[in-house]
Amino acid sequence: MSATAQTIDRISPETNLFESILELIRRTSTILPDDVVRAVTGARKNEVEGSNADVALNVIGCNIGLARDSSLPLCQDTGTILFYVHTPAGYDQLAFEEIATEAVRTATKKGYLRQNSVDSITGKNTGDNTGPGSPVFHFHQWREPHVEVKLMLKGGGCENMNAQYSLPHPDLGGRDLKGVENAILDCVLQAQGQGCGPGILGVCIGGDRGTGYGFAKEQLLRMLDDTNHDPVLAELEARVVEKANQSGIGPMGFGGKTTLLACKIGKLNRLPASFFVSIAYMCWAYRRRGAELNLSGEVSNWLY
Image (cartoon, rainbow, N blue to C red; front, side, top):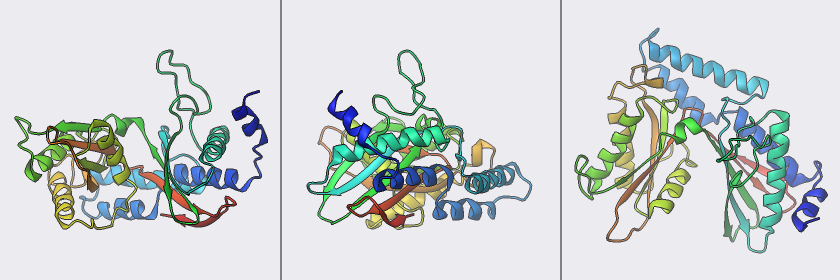
């Protein structure tokens, strides 16, 4: 028996870390965060009563309530399972990954997650959401005395609407904020309500193609109602949302004033030869939650 298999065999459903991660998965899949619920509820006030946009947002609101009250997934696609974990130096990250992966298997069996992971060549479903690249772990060390874990579930429909642009672009402009703004708005235009809008955008200016997409997704860990610490990016975020909501695309592409709920932008240094704008499009089912854990694996504070 391999060392990994022996480790998994020692995992007990009663262990603190296992139970904490399992509950984190349940909450993330079934209970939309308060800031997202407020944004969806507030958006209805901007739509004409009885319009297609109003009806769409009402259906979304009903979905949110039913999922929460019944502990059922918010969507038939429970998405890519993305763990973002900060640990103290010396913490056993391998053990965390093994226990969290076992929690994913159990969450799938319990119905908190759909059976969503398939072999990319054969199409065969693994049945438990595990396999190469599933779940995904991003580990970082820090000097805090506790563990922080954030979980994002990103559906395939909105993932299909991600986009990456290389500036200068003949139709969008040069390597400046105007070119960046045009690229982001073009992404919204191309989506046309696909990806289950109203959407939320995570954006990275700079980096390379790989780090840009990764950092764009990390922007989706921010609160919807926060303010970017960089005033230039804060203005750009507000301008993108304002213009997108004037496009008339609306919820699910049905028309209306709510095309985006938010836009969150970060930046990375780049090489002089490259200027990428990477955009991670998130659906209204903006599933991300987190927890602070003590070193025994118990939850000391829930995030979001």
